Amino acid sequence: MQLVHFRDLGKMEYGYAWKLQESIFNDIVQKKLKNRVLNDEEQLTYSHQLLFVEHNPVITLGKSANENNVLLNETLLNQNGVSLFHINRGGDVTYHGPGQIVGYPILDLDYFFTDLGKYLRSIEEVIILTLADYGLKGERLPGSTGVWLDATNKNARKICAIGIRSSRWVTMHGFAFNVNTDLNNFKLIIPCGIQDKAVTSLEKELGKQIPLDEVKAKLKQHFATVFNCKLI
Image 1 (cartoon, rainbow, N blue to C red):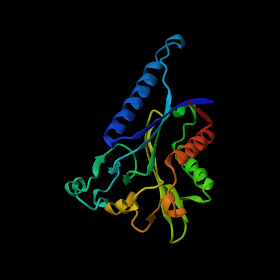
Image 2 (image 1 turned 45 degrees about the vertical axis):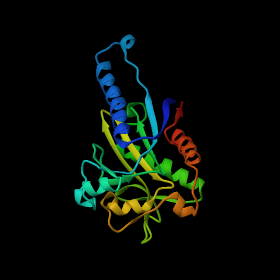
Image 3 (image 1 turned 30 degrees about the horizontal axis):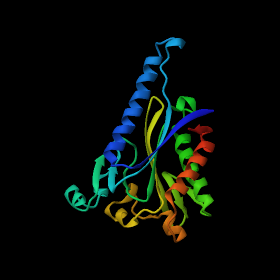
């Protein structure tokens, strides 16, 4: 069973969290490369990481994002207290903000499974299991990574967005789970480039705010189960 170091970063500006991710990610990748030519006694050690964070309002655009899916220009966004970042994950445009739990697993999948499709489905499963704890049925929408409610009918609404980067089977970026998120800010974008689907939150679905620490504890429990690991 793999050990995964867990850190709750609390509230952190997106840029700082991205730099932290990049630092951990690059350290693992470089050590993996060096270990190829080192003998067993010289092997460099590194650890898997799971970071939780809550961001100030920010819009991020993935590598394949359509900038037209951001409905205000950067100047107007900044005037409204919203930052904008072009980043190196997959996917289109998404929003992060207070009341949303963002999870960044930085894992060497060589120690889990070398299958990115399975990795994405596994992250979805963590969210689906967490939603089940609250009596909600999380679902997958064919052709669209993430977790939805009523995925296959006209009331489909997304509760968790997922976007990752991977190099040499090391992952970064991750999921954004709407717990007590102000959904009005999603009106600034066309989330994930999908125009005909709504966005929701745990608060909206349950009609009350849910303590973030409570949800984090459930996410950690299900992450350990799905990835067959121990969080330390």
